[in-house]
Picture 1 (cartoon, helix red, strand yellow):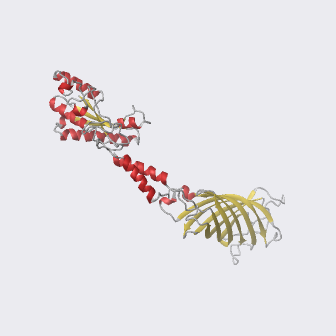
Picture 2: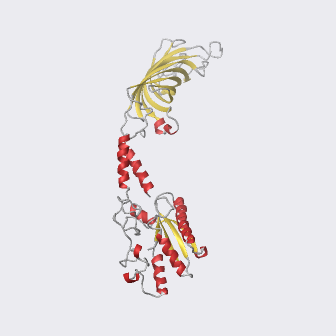
Picture 3: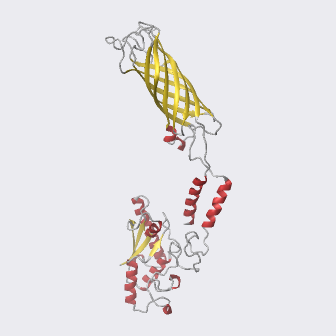
Amino acid sequence: MKKLILSTIMAGALAIGANAQDYDKFSLEVGGGFNKPMAPLTPGYLSPTLNLGHVEFGARYMFNEKFGLKLDYGFGSFKEAGADDAATGTFDTKYYRLDLQMVSNLGRIMHFESFSRSLGLLGHFGAGIGNVNPEENLYNDFTDDVYNFIVGVTPQLKIGKSVAIFGDISAIINGRQTVAFDGASVIRPEDQGFYGANGTWWTGTVGLQFYLGKNEEHADWYVAADKYATKEELATQINGIKDMLKDSDGDGVPDYLDKEPNTPAGARVDSAGMTMDSDGDGTPDHMDKCPFMPGPASTDGCPVEEVKEQLDFFKKAINDGYVNVYYAFDSAKPLGYSASAANYVSNFLKKNPGVSVEVKGYADELGPEDYNMKLSERRAKAVYDLLVASGVDASRLSYKGYGEDTSVDKSSADARQMARRASFEVK
């Protein structure tokens, strides 16, 4: 129980005592690579699968480690499939674009840090302006001003504190474009104008990202969970936890939970450290030879009755749930203060050889239902083993797990503790 409490408090203390970390927010990007005009192209004009001819520059600001804003400028030229390819006409079309884009750090959102601290992934989308300027064919003297929409993904590889390699694939749609990418035709000659978003092309680039600032990490690589308390803070917190976990009276309940911190040695206590008097006869259980049958102090708490009356009373006390073995959270090992209940049942069975008992295990409502069913069965089995080890014939015993005890208040820690138990039923 102490180990469970210690680990829980330590986790909370580390989270609260952690120091805040800052991170850099600005970066510059430069890259180059390929482009591919998809449509519109005039019949008889073909573009290569990968045309080397695109350059771009960008400046980015991250609002936090997951979202930011980027302004980037890209330019280049579209070419025909090949100078020696008779199946296509030649063309040379210059272009530029200027876009403002939202950036999402998908690597942090999808927790890439769980398997790598040097791989990242950005997503981006936005809009901007640009132009398409054919230098050959019928419309070689026409400059086509357009607007555009852009979306793409950017894998990253961190190679140093202030620099990373990136690759990017972006798809661009031009709006209000009049001339085909080859400059040989207009899109709607009957209107002699433009309509809609009708120019589609993409780029694939490789380049470098340079991070600006003096912090240890840029927002691209910052992980909020990387917060650690100082050694001095840890030492102070651990010493405080140790003080909380002291058990002055040795009853198995730490002082900070113990409502009766001066319990007599050997006393049977409940989960709050209070001395138990299960039958309410004024004689504490550790001094009561019949703790579940009220009786005068002159007979050490045992009633002056016939054996049958004792049997009937004992059966009622057990079957009504006054005799229980309790467990810590997620444990099938009986808590020390309650294991003596198994001894009382063992003594009674030895005195009454015609009686049999079922051990019934329960769990609280925390955790999956199938797991709690198995946990309750292990708890019942643990008490069954204690009774067999004490000399009770196994043929007089049975055990079964009943899973979650839904009769208690799930939001109450004390109620959940009472649900973690093994009870008995006299047959």
